[in-house]
Image (cartoon, rainbow, N blue to C red; front, side, top):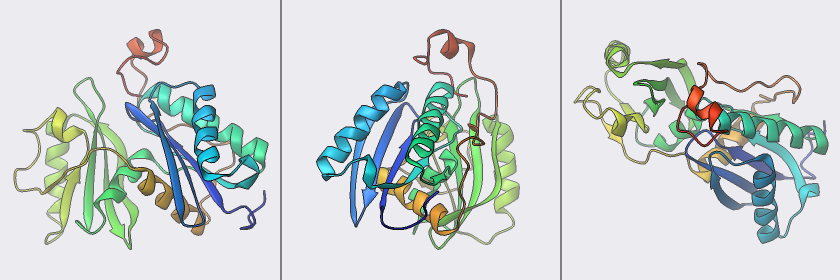
Length: 240
C-alpha cells in the first residue's frame, strides 16, 4: 500500500456509541458528519461524500483510513470496521484501528496523567480501560475489558494506589452508575469522543506505523452481542 504524503487526507469512522462520526482531516483542516450508531455502510459513504464535498476533495485524495474497532455497539462496531476495511482495500491505502476507549481517553489530555475510561455496556456492566497519557498518546495499562461497576471500582482503587496522583475517570459509565466510583477520583466531563480526538489518535497510529491489514482486522467486541440488538437489526441499545 502507498505510504506517501501525496494523498495527505485521513478518512476516519467510529460507530461504537449511540451517535457515530465520519471524520475527514488533512492539510490543517477537519470536516465531520454525525451519523446514527446503527447506520448502514451506504449511509456512512454518503456522510463521507458530504464531508469531502465540503472540503473540495474526493476519494482520490484519501491516503489513510481509520476506524474505532470497539468495544461498543455490536452493530455499530461491525458496520464501521466493515466499511473501513472495504475502503482501505479498494483505495489501496493504509488502515489504522485504535480501540474506541482510547478515542475517548485522548479527550483527557492536559487534565490527567492516567485515565480510567468507563463506557456503559448495558446489562449492568461497563467496558473499561486503564491508560497512561504519554505526550497526548494513550498507552494501555489494563484492558480493554468488561466488568460490573462494583468489581471495577475495587480494581481502580488498587491501580491508582500505585501512583501519587494525576488519575481521573471519564465516560458514559459515570452517568450510568454515578455512585459506583471512588468519591475522591476526579471526573472529567464530556462522555463522547470528538472528531478531532479521533483524527489525532489515527495520526498517532500512523506515525508509529501501527497499521492493520484490511483482511485481518477484526472488531473488538469483548463479549457476545445482546440478542435484542441482533433481532432489531442494530436498532437496539445492547453493546457488543
